[in-house]
Length: 190
Image 1: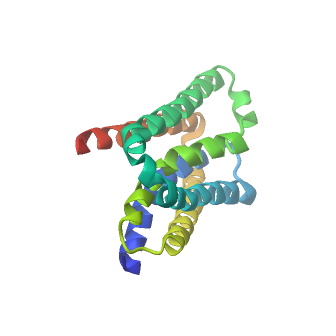
Image 2 (image 1 turned 30 degrees about the horizontal axis):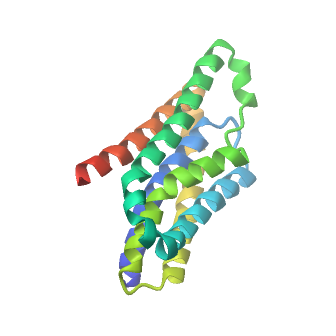
Image 3 (image 1 turned 120 degrees about the vertical axis):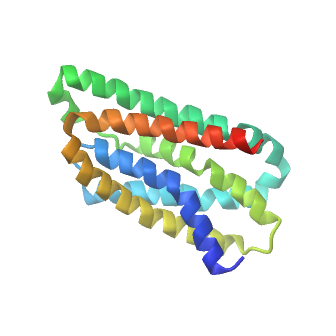
């Protein structure tokens, strides 16, 4: 696989992570460099590690992974999205509570990182059947995701401040839609 194709693959894999980063930036009352870097690093890390796991372990479990990856992504992203919507509804009743919410918690970022990188695991299985240096591919995927997520958090926060109280609601809806998109995309491929 040439570098151009690998970069296109990395951009495709980073799209979900970018959208979730955008959502996080929109919903956060404050965004620091630490928040941005934590998001970008976590998502980049999972996007880089999952293809390696898929490459080495996925061949054995490829049938199981392909059958359930869309369900896992749908459930994780929907659960996070529903929680964000619930928080938005509560915050409309108590607007001061919104500024206390921190969506950049370690547990939230890890859940989001896993949910958005499950497809990268499946890609790793595919890469095992091609003449691809998995370490190079993993590094490119991780770096591209890191860059995309850095911009995602920044752009989301910039536009999220224009939306005010409704940013968390929109972000939650966006996460659910991403989960549904992954699920529907898988159903269409069947």
